[in-house]
Image (cartoon, rainbow, N blue to C red):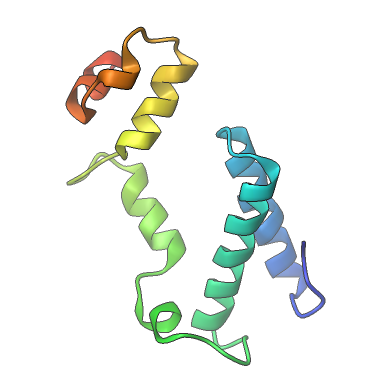
Length: 108
């Protein structure tokens, strides 16, 4: 889905994000949409896009948000991320577990 308006850097960024999402179990269509939205938001933040919404330019950057989520800071991983890991590890009863139970089950 890379567009002509994207430069080589943005095309590489799109492919990197898309591949990472697919590795984590997202469908190809969903991965393409999320990757395109992320790249377009970064383009808007960098002033590369002709049009941009206020949330695209004023909000926390996508890479910063991902970096904050990847560490076990205030919230750590989301419940959905913990659930996906539990699914990969075949944890029994994962669908009815709370976030804290999932954290214990996947060995946080």
